Length: 88
Image 1 (cartoon, rainbow, N blue to C red):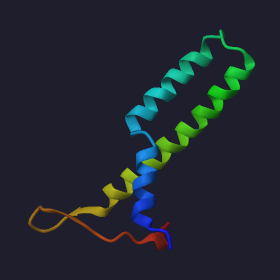
Image 2 (image 1 turned 180 degrees about the horizontal axis):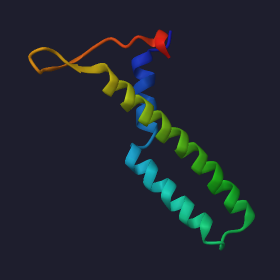
Image 3 (image 1 turned 90 degrees about the horizontal axis):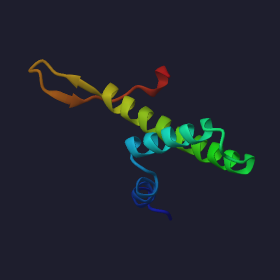
Image 4 (image 1 turned 135 degrees about the vertical axis):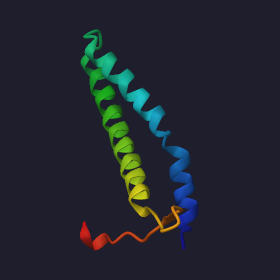
């Protein structure tokens, strides 16, 4: 039976940090806008960029979920609250 925590750790190790993925994406856009690339290279850059966009979107969604889970209690301390996924 696969270990979910091990798979999550491997997934995290494989995907770049948000800032790194965003920087790579910006570089790809600049390269594609330069008009100096052959069609095959443009297609490869587009494919790579699409993967990076997905990574960035997933990381932003994860961060948003974590932020939504935080709430201040009466003492002003931050604590995690359960998220009601039925609202989505």
